[in-house]
Amino acid sequence: MTLSPTARSSDVAARVAADQLGALVAERAPDPLTPEIDWAGPVGHPLPDENAVQAACGIMHVHGRAAGAPQRLGVDYASTLAGVLGTQGVLAASIARVRGARITEVRTSVAQAALLAVQQYLAVATSDDDWAEQWQPGRRPPFTSRDGVRFELETLHAEGWGRFWNGLGADRDAIAAGWWPFQQRFSTATGALPQPLHDVLRTVDYATVAAVAAHTGVSALPVRESPAPPADVPACTFRQLSTSSAPPPVRTGDEPLNGMLVVESTRRIQGPVVGHVLQRLGADVVRIEPPGGDPMRGTPPMAGDCSARFRALNDGKRVVELDLKTSAGRQAARELASEADAFVHNWAPGKAEEFGLDAETLSGDRPGLAYAWSSGWAPLAGPDQPLGTDYLVQARSGLAAANYPADVPPAPSLMTLTDVLGGMVCAQGVLAALLGQVRTGRGYRVDSSLFSAAGTVPRPRQRQVWTELDRPLPTADGHVVLPRGLDTATLLAAAGTAEPPAVAARVREHPTAFWQQRLADLGSTATPVCTDLRELADDPHFARALTHQPFAAPKHPWEFS
Image (cartoon, rainbow, N blue to C red; front, side, top):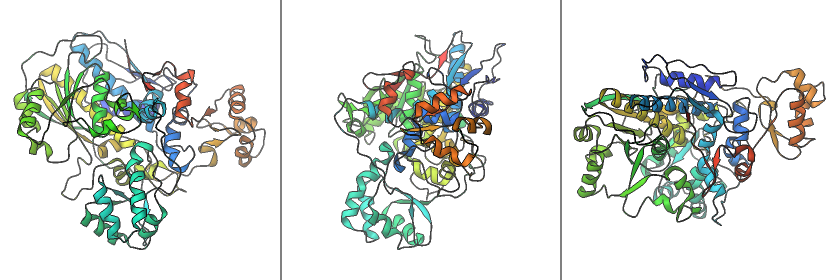
C-alpha cells in the first residue's frame, strides 16, 4: 500500500492513514489503491492547514464554547480523522474490488473530516425546532481539590450525582442546579456549574473526593499533566474466529458495502458512529433498540418526531425493538446476528457474555462474522476502571494536556473528541475484518476503545508554548487565524508594522474581510473563524459539502472512482 499525498495534502492525515493501513491491506493487485487526502475537498474556502480547517469548519467554535470564544485545539484532530477516513475508504474500496467493482481512486479531505466531527452540533443548530439551545460561558470542570489535584468527575445518573455531592456537604440548590448542565455538556460542549460545587471541592483533599466517589458509584480521575500518548496501544486488535465457506455477499448497488448486513446494539455517540459510517458506505444497518425506542430519540431539539442530534448519527438505519433483558429478546438478537456480516456493540464489560451474545457464540451461529466491541478503556483491564466516557479518557490519555498550550491548565475539550474518533476507529476495524471475511471467509473479533482511539492522535511529549499569533486573533468584527509558518516579513507587511508584538493589536483595528484581502494580496491566507454553525450551513462555500434536509448534515466524505 502506498500513499502519495499531493502538495495540498495533510502530512498528518497521510501518516495516520499509512500507520493504520499498515498490515490491514495486503494489496496484491498491480494497481494498489492510493487514498488522496487534501485540505478542503468540496469546501470552497482556501484552507492551507489544520488551523484553517478547524477555524472554517466549526471545530474552534465548538471547542471554545465553554470559554466563550473560539479556541484552537492543540492537536491535529481534523487531520487525524481524515487519515482514518482515508483508511476506511481504502478498506471499503478493497472489499468492493474483491466483489467485482473497478475502483482505482479513493478521495477525501480534512475539511470533510472536520464537518463529520461537528455534525451533531450542526444538526442541533439548524433544526427547525423552536427549542432554544441553552449554553453560556461559565466555570466548567475540571475541579480542583484542596491539595491542588485537578480532576474530572463522571456519573450517568442523577442519583449518583446527588449522593456524591450530599456526601461532601454541598448546597442542595447548587446540586440540583448543576445536574442539567453537567449531564448536557456532551451535547452542548459547555458545562457551566454553580460556583458552590467548585468551592466545596476546594475544601477537601483529593483522597477524600476519591473515597466519596467510590462509595457513591461516581468516577473521579486526575487530569494528566503530560500530553504524551499511551505507549504501544494499537487502535484496534483482531482475533480470528470461525471460518465460513460461503462466497462473499452479492453487491446490489454502487456503494462499496451494498448487499452487506450490519447489526448494531449501541448507544450515545461512539457506538452509533460505527453503524453511521458503515451505512454511508452502503451497508444495510439494523439497529437494536429497547422497547419504546432509544431514550435519546426524545432529546431536544426535534427534527420531525425525533431528536435532531440522534438523527444525525442514526438516520438511514432500520430499527428492531428488543428487550435484551429477556430470553426472547436475546434469542431474537442472536437470530438477527446469524444473518449478518457484522455485529457491533458498545455494552459495558461483561454484558455480551451475560446476554449470551459474545463473539464465540455468535460466530458459532454465523461463521465468518465480523464481531466488534467498541469500549471505553481496552486494552486497559481490571475491576476498578472508571466509567468509559469521553472526558475521563481525555484526562487519562494525555489528550486533555495536549488540547491547550502550556500556559493554560490541562482540561478535556468539551467537544466529544474521543467519542467521534473512537467510533471512527471501530468502523475502520470492522472494515478490515470485512475485508478479511470476503477474501478468506475468516471471521474476526475486533476490539477498540475510546482510549485506544485517543492514542492515534499525534502529539508532542511536552506541552507546547503558543504565541498570541498561534491562536484565533480578534478582528473588528470576528476572528481570523493565520497560516502556520507564515514568514515574518509577510506578517509584518500585512500588519503594516515593524514590531511583531504589535501585530495582534493591529488586527483588531479592521474587519475580517480586510485581513482576508490583505493576506491574499501578499500571496497568503487569513481564514475567518466560524462562530455560528447556522451561518456555516448557509455559507455557499459549503454548498457542495452539506445537505439540508431536514437539518444541515455532511454529505458522504469519500469519493470512489
